[in-house]
Length: 161
Image (cartoon, rainbow, N blue to C red; front, side, top):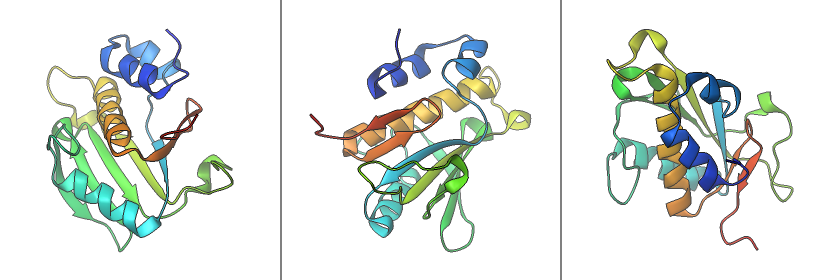
């Protein structure tokens, strides 16, 4: 299966049970970034609220818990008993080089961090990372957000022809 579209990629993340494939082909590793494009303050508020209110049928459908603010521009959330920490930053992250879409820099960076020492029984931390990324990816699609998954070179541009 090709992961050239967000739909194919999210399906693979949800269904893949092979840890080696998750790590090498699907690039599910610590410090996994998703970049969002648009009004910085509006996106940051919208995304952090969706994580804080999860699970929600109209927002992020999986449960992200223990919201913590870290400074003025960062929120942290835990997933699957803490196996994954999600960091939402209201800033451009240049660690991954030029990540522009239509000449625009991303305005919010959502970073997924694995916490192997805190994985939930029965769910390995790599699979927990894949499920967290997939859950957020579904939210991106429903909300029609412009996003980039740089590890796999996938852009999601709603209503693009």
